[in-house]
Image 1 (cartoon, rainbow, N blue to C red):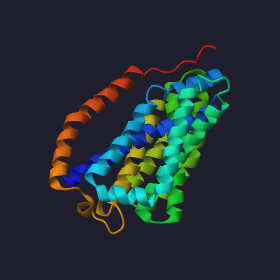
Image 2: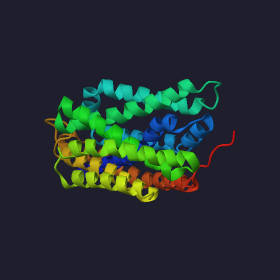
Image 3: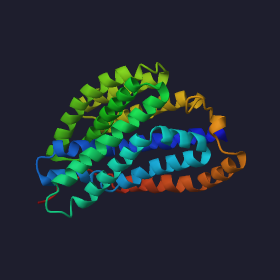
Image 4: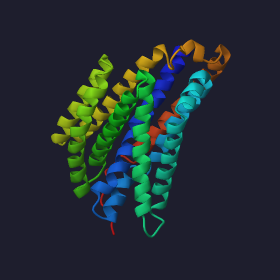
Length: 293
């Protein structure tokens, strides 16, 4: 049961980083790619139907940690109290910006909130998990830079995949520029692991750059998503031995009865959540066309 719940929590964090990763990237890039309010709306409409659903993954991941590994949960969020608080502030500011920008006369402050609320969590999540693995301020900064650059690339590819016209062309250029930053940063960050998943993640990022150059946006998005999956796998492989310094999984876990009951609840509810979210992406799968003035 302990191993099962650790794998499930790793799966939930991976889903969060893959799905919320392109949300963060789109939020960062939309003001840079758009040339007028209509293009800004077109860019943000690519994540409009899904961004709040994507945030459910982190709520579920944190809730699962609280129930299955309370000592890990308590130690993690106590040690990183300030960064986690800033992440929550960033997510709130981004949510307010996304919801309010169509209801105010001057959406400039909303757009600024979306940018800050996308960049802050992206950087801080990378810093937190890098510090968990390596226990080093330098590693934390490098992890933050890695997450921010990769999520930016992921979002640029997503924009190129989901839009048409000038926005799509600029998103493709942004993806090429972002890959020029993400791949070197990843080369430094991932080689610190030296594990097969980390090196495979680096190869996937390099492949994404080549694919976007060839205008294969769908495959490029699969490559950036795969890189995030592999990088997260590399982190959780390291955390499996000791999720916190001096704390094993067995020591961090809840009792057998609690884990058993949670397993039944999870097996009954998780499939419905996955089917519902998959259906949402299927319904909104078409490219977003320019918005009429």
